[in-house]
Length: 449
Image 1: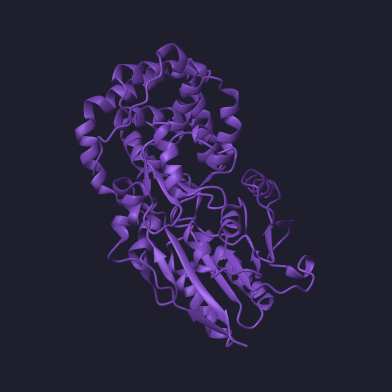
Image 2: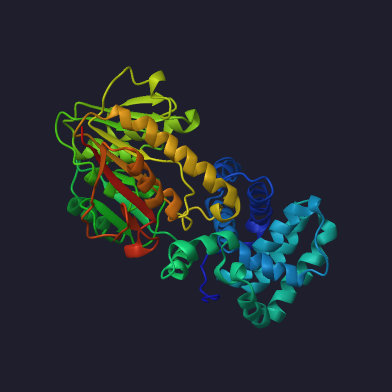
């Protein structure tokens, strides 16, 4: 347990009072309202003008969700009686207060005082004494509270119990490493647009800007920043020199064996990172079609392509119903990056720990199978389908592909030989944190006749 690894983020006291109340409200929308953290932050941060205050709100939101199961276990010990349901925002403020004391390099008197004041900003002046008592109680009982975390796997590993059990079953030798990776801060990884510049030239450009970076292992065009920066601080970002993409996701384009004149379909394409990488890798493709069912996210594909100076046919459509959009066309290559549990990217999206439920897995597996069945007829003989997920669960990965191969006699797996990840019965898996990559699964299938 590394309870005292801390992050330094200092905001002057007068500025930060409402930042904590804002963070509590946003956390309440995720925890009680079951909304995604990305969506909540997209609207919630718009109203905060000060950059340091925005950074504090973001830090409190991400950090409190990342360590939720630990913080909640400690909070239950520190409260004399449970809070009423209508005070869920106050509960979130207390969790964020504990996060500041446990894991942020703030002077503890600042964390306590500002969190107490934030109760007033939530219109809960009656609770200032309670907030003070809980946070002072943590300071007094910290050592014992941390020792007691060992009594509960959820608290110890800061992940939901059902997921811990699934990982033990699927990865008996690796489950603890997967859980620890899920609690880490993710790196900011970039993909250099090879149509505009080289990795070496972009690294030199970063160095001139005083941004420390290194080449990403297992990639031709990947870069990892030593310290993340906002994308608008990246030189040439607006002009399309570079995109944000994890090293694991950067493997997809290379596995498609792209060549001039091929027709390519990216079947679940938003936000368009892999579509763009396909076009950057092979500019002489006959066509690239990007399909996504989520109209709200479809504009992200268009925005990404426009920024990078790339062109594809972008469709708002359900990939599982190709008759409605494909006009009888065949595609030589299909990238099927299916909706999944996202259990491989928890370090980037800690809200998954709370939002994902065991019952979701079965419906996701059904949706994935439906997409596979719908895509397969669109391939000609000799064509290839690349199936990918950002999951680490076997039901969504090797078992899904194994089941598909059993019932499709014209499908043959093309084994992936690579320097990254590990072979599965079918396909290849990168576990979260391996070579600092996200958790990702890949399987290549060729159509025989």
